[in-house]
Image 1 (cartoon, rainbow, N blue to C red):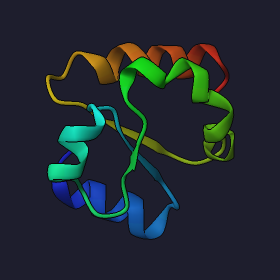
Image 2: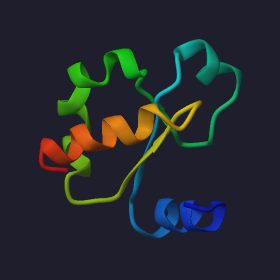
Image 3: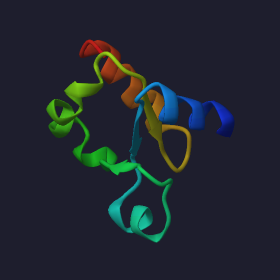
Image 4: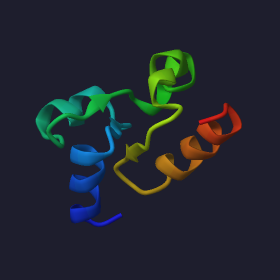
Length: 79
């Protein structure tokens, strides 16, 4: 999605924003309002994301590989 779509989803749709990068990278810089759930912890923390089953959930990663992979996991889990 582009930056404007991101802003619209966050401001008007109650979207969640999950940053999948390691904590060190997240703490150096991140999008305001993002929650850090590193890829290595993602599967264990799915229950914490259950409030987003009926809302958009945006995944951000460093390479473009992790987000699509974990998006497929979310779909499998009913998100």
